[in-house]
Image (cartoon, rainbow, N blue to C red; front, side, top):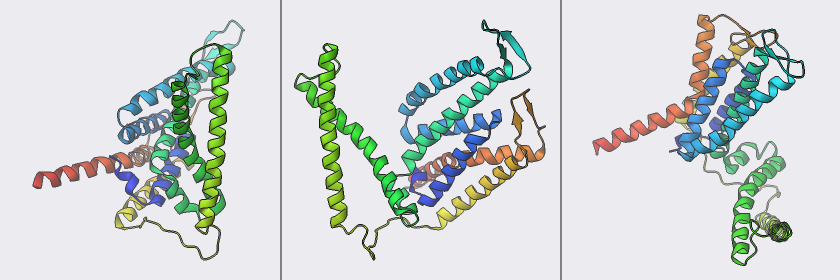
Amino acid sequence: MNEFKTYHPIVNFIYFVFVIGFSCFLMRPVCLCISLVCAFAYSVILNGTKAIKTNLLYMLPIIIAMALINPAFNHEGITIIKYLPSGNPLTLESVAYGIAAAIMIASVICWFSCYNEVMTSDKFIYLFSRIIPSLSLILSMTLRFVPRFSAQIKVVADAQRCMGRDVSNGSIIKRAKCGLAVLSIMTTWALENAIETADSMKSRGYGHSGRTAFSIFTFDKRDKKVLLCIIILGIYTLAGYMSDGMYFRYFPSMKANDISVFSLSVFIAYLALCMCPIIIEVWEAARWKAIKSKI
């Protein structure tokens, strides 16, 4: 189930620009929780239940580590909990900021995992091929190369293991030799693959003037509606941020603006923005279920 992926690339790209950007700058605890929960939920929708284990495997260590490390180096804040053996104070504000920063990083990582699933290389090239053709091609090839390299190195390692050259068994010297053999094979494979790619692009006329490109993307009414909704919610959230409607500080003491009708509406707009793909998935699933029930 990935209905949002079928929308026009400009819709997908603008959405992720908004949510990833807001996730980096909106440090109010409510906003951090909204971003993390929505990113986690959408990643589960995209990748299934395996995303739960993967996300927790990365998120929990990050949150715990930053929550512990930040107070050890950051001693700002006026609410002293206790004094460390070094004599430096452990403050409530530094602990809270460490947890907030960890949640921010975890949510951004989660959003980027969703971005990589939705924004494929062909979408990226479609959007930026005419603006920055060389850079878009390099980024697309890089993003495509990493998963291919990972898959190929697994194939090579399995083949070497069948020949008795297992990198996980034996002495350190033996494992190092086996690892170097795998690395040598992968280096040769990467160079050969680069030459084949260059020859293929040259034979297809890449870089020649007047060369056309095939595209399957069309911007229809459905895309217009969703894009308009995303832009309105994004601009409204940005206006709330610029007008300090979502203001929150951690140092020297934790302080936030009072909840008003405007700030509450900004929180709702931000929640709706983050939940856009989830709403689309649920809506389309309900529509499909209704259609099936009528057959």
